[in-house]
Image 1 (spheres, rainbow, N blue to C red):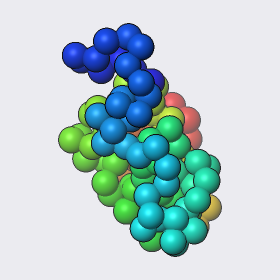
Image 2: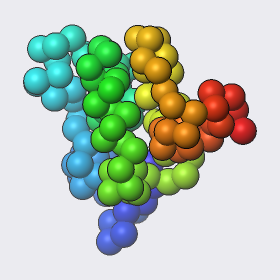
Image 3: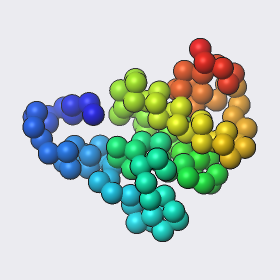
Image 4: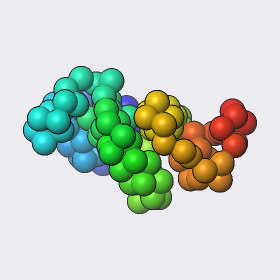
Length: 114
């Protein structure tokens, strides 16, 4: 996890996660829907962007494509999260436009790795 501005080394993980807007456990509203394990999330370290259903995968694609949402991540984290979202979308048969922001963030071009 990247070090946050103003946070000293040794800051407990709980403070880092909540500072980034994440959760220490799956949020209750997603747990009820079945997103109970880390693999159900595109950002498993913060339990953000659930991708366990087609509805969640579409929402994650839309939300994570916005710069204000993906801007807090490092380049490698951004790419990894975008790839997980794209993989989940494909798994549910969701068509992803070749020029979509999520594929650009994932480092893919037209469904093929760049």
